Image 1: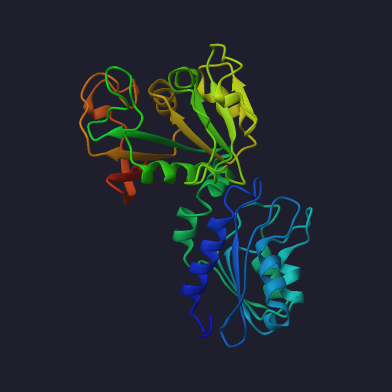
Image 2 (image 1 turned 60 degrees about the vertical axis):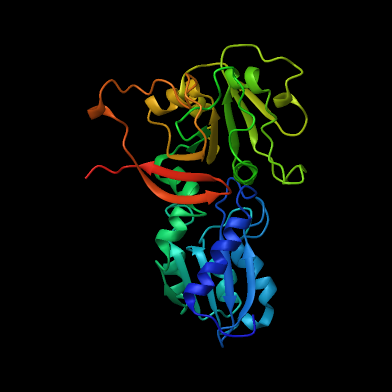
Length: 340
């Protein structure tokens, strides 16, 4: 950029940098950082590298070089004050001569927290909470959930007709949703730590469960493929090919599945209706992504089966947090309604 930018614009850049590295930083959070020189010009942008490599601040500082001195660092997460496989980011920022640090979300991890205090003790001006809601609902959503609850964040994704059917009565389902919707699903798979289906989906659709580009090329990051159920999966099933690792969990209990994936952060639940219903009944779905196509199928193949609701007053209540067009389809993103 050739002109100075304000803090909101700088945070936008940092958020984009964080989103670009989602999926590749596990188990570390996907963080973005921007360095502005003393005149407010962007001189460095970085995202967290894979584990054991540089954090976002260090990547951005390396790009900025000497121009960081007297400048401002804008970061999506409070800089860490922790010696792990890499050094504390607070020391890197102070050592580069940065005079001000602006961050969005305070680090809830007690091992890494305290960065803001440490920077202030070193004479660096610190401002926290800038665009915190956007960052918390964006690139850090799943990681913050894991820090808060101790378990992975689970997103249930499904594609259906506008009347909620995931297939026609004869079982045909390819394709209900549009090319744009399917491309978005692959993009989100590339961010996830694990993609989860039941054996019923494997037998019905023989999915690969890989993340691919619109050109059908495998993405650099592939999620762990997880198959849940008691039935034996054929050795020639596509989900067992060499494109990614696969875990088979022989259970019908969602709690056991989550326990087996306890070291993961972002789990993408893709079906089918029986497994989705079990996770919803167990209260283990944290977000719903519904890709709805403008068609009517009727019949008896719902997107989700029994969720434990016998009467309207017991309905599982959700609220929209995002609505987006996907070509001819609509993507509805929902989160649980918070009781008042």
